[in-house]
Length: 147
Image 1 (spheres, rainbow, N blue to C red):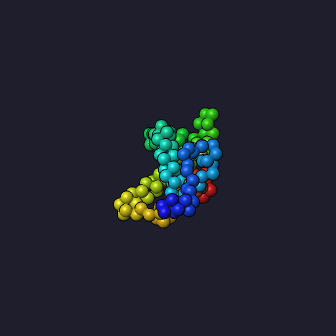
Image 2 (cartoon, rainbow, N blue to C red; image 1 turned 60 degrees about the horizontal axis):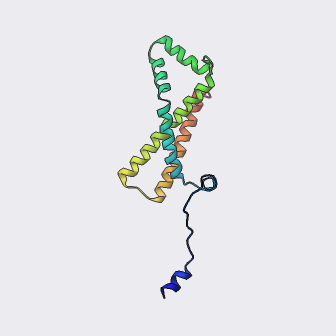
Image 3 (cartoon, rainbow, N blue to C red; image 1 turned 90 degrees about the horizontal axis):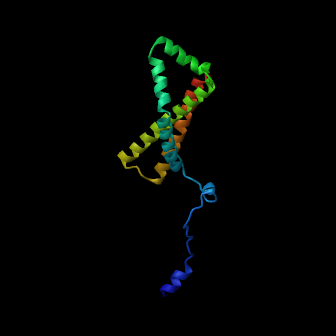
């Protein structure tokens, strides 16, 4: 009798090995997965660019002359590095900070309120992505002098 019930059920597929070249490009990652991966990437960006952040802070508060040199770096550049490249690096830092902060607040909110459900995870991930990208666009427009 138990043989009949087990033979009528369709066999579930077994995934033993994941091939990175064939399986990963077709895998659809949910929004919460994107937020998690981007949270790690933004933390790595901030960590790796820490010397640049310290240089910017030092040049902006040392003296009036160093502040003038700092602000001219955004317009003219520094030696062989054009000003647009410096602005793009700063824009990446702005996104990294905003995304890391908003995603961190999302995780803290979920931990404090025990709000671990599929629906809340998806909606809060979409809000996190929208907020971080929207605020980055606004601050990036200010950085590039659009307003």
